[in-house]
Length: 171
Length: 389
Image (cartoon, rainbow over all chains, first blue to last red; front, side, top):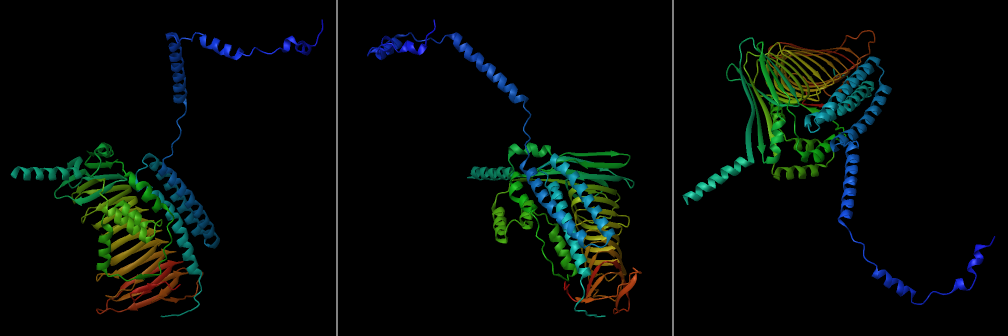
């Protein structure tokens, strides 16, 4: 027999009010309930879960690749290196633009390549012995040299190209 | 009272020994004969080379702790590693020690020195008598603490900041150790030295035949005298009182000061040299270096320079007659701080450009010959070379 279930709750009997003290009665019944006792078996379960959790956690932690720690000194050197290389590149462009002597450009190119090779060798030594002051100096000197020789030769070429406006022959 | 005095003395001795302790970590002695040779290899080392008092070869490595924490001493000792052996009448010594920098210096000082160096404009060179150059050499040879050197060279701090930092450092109780390798060589020994990023101090006059190759670092020399010496220095500093005889090859020596250069064949490139005195006969072949020459000895005979893209700054001899000639092309001359122009001879790179001569009291003429292409030559009788260009 078909019927609409919404009609079942429309009758008066179904909508009658709850007794007034039903809340109090419920709370009293709740208080009288016996408390659940923690047995030694329960402690064992907690201990077992802890051991499993620790074991799993430890194994996950130990199997994780160690984070690569870059020493602050290495990071500083790398930052300085980047700054220098940017400037060296700019000076090289300026030098090539004013130098008319191809042999000179080739010799400077070779010199810079040699210095770069030395720098790479010293970088390996630096990573092996990051506290070695002399190795750090050699790295910085290498970069400073590249910059300096490019600046010096440009200054030299400029002097050579200057015309002696105030010509005076003292001989 | 007597007991109290003894106790006080004992306390003082104990406290002193706590502040500075020197330990010998390596000591060896080898007998040598007239055919013995020695091969010394240094990597990031700090070495002193002295003349042996006898025919023996001595090696001693000491470490001096100054207020250094006890817990760190073991690690400092372990960083020292010297190996030596004597086979086939050759002594081979290798210093494999590692340098330990005190943590304090890392961030406060080195970073400052690594900043871009400002290009300090040099507008003139002053003439220096030989004694002044030698005095400067003695000063330059004195050990300076790394911290002081970094502060002085740093462009990170203003001058007033530098002064404050140096004063503060002077007041600070030092906590450091000094690791020192001392080698004493008998004068008959033929020495071969290969060095990388090391500080070598040749503290006494050595007449030994030396073949030295130094890459990086610093070389401080008293007097070297041997016609067969071959000294190659690359990317390093050279401070020497006298180099007499042999061959000197310099590649990118940032600071080279030589008190006296005598009977030497010098090849250089990308270097900066200041020479107190040229004596007897000297030959120089150079590419792109800067030379500053102050004096000529009384026994000076000839200086022959062959240069390309070089800058030669020369104070003309004051003590004797000379004939100075420049050959070449495309070269700027400045005589007594005034520019002198020459016509460009494109087809001949050996055109005679300048001829100066002055007779001395004894009518003798020593020779200065400079063959140069694309060079800058500044010559003066005055006491200053100004860069008017």
